[in-house]
Length: 68
Image (tube, rainbow, N blue to C red; front, side, top):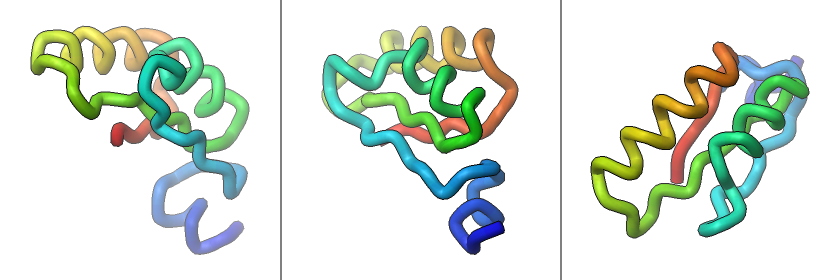
């Protein structure tokens, strides 16, 4: 296990980029389920939208997910 994996709690040393309009809750959850660190893009979104996306990704996976 790599230091990155130990730090974030994933199995594989892969982090998905938090790209606007691409890093959706479905993609972040899929990457996390596959063993990497899925990322949500939250840059210029409203708090309400961010909360909705976080709730959505948490309903899809219990594995670690980040936001950027």
